[in-house]
Length: 265
Image 1 (cartoon, helix red, strand yellow):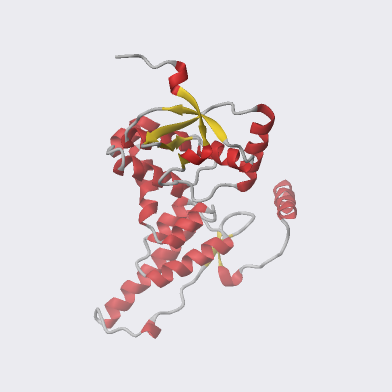
Image 2 (cartoon, helix red, strand yellow):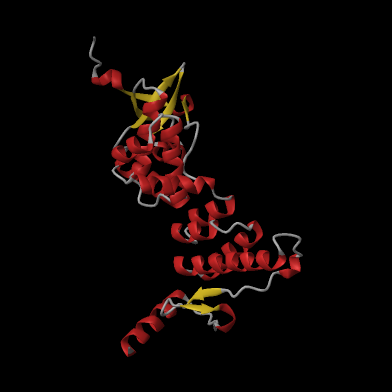
């Protein structure tokens, strides 16, 4: 077997001959971060080549998508690439490993990466677990996000709710009530215990109505208004929503008030 030389592995390729990844895992790419990366490349040059694989007479990006986009911002005509002939399985692994190194990867994007490793690379949960050094339970939880409604996925991606809260609210069997709970959670911020209490109270009332009504024929108006709770901004204990007091303040003032109350305690 003839060993490839450095010149054969690293090549300068025209941008118009390079195709972006067929499936982009990131839901959005921060334009500010791209501009900062472009400025860095302009000042210091490309510190690390992007990875591409041949596709006929063209090339497809394996890793380094953001560096490629930064070059387009700089209106550059070409980019230094590491060219390797690799199969779809290895492409999925390389992309996953690159993206998992990002500190701002959202739970939805993480779940999407694991799903790609299962579908494109044919890896089991256990194999993925060993590869990325995370427990099978964590991988299952992230992949379960892909089964949630789009509204839940968006809320998680925007970091409006935690995974624990999403899982508790998702267990609500009534779709309209589940979306209502989600809206409240996004608007006010709640803990997992509060989310669990909402769903348990709702399910309990459902069981009571079914028992009293003989198991069917219920009118929509038969449901009583359920108590809604939210977390106190200061002590984080649950409080019934109708009893809470609202105060419109900026984040900095909110922080100062919390610190002052802690000092008093």
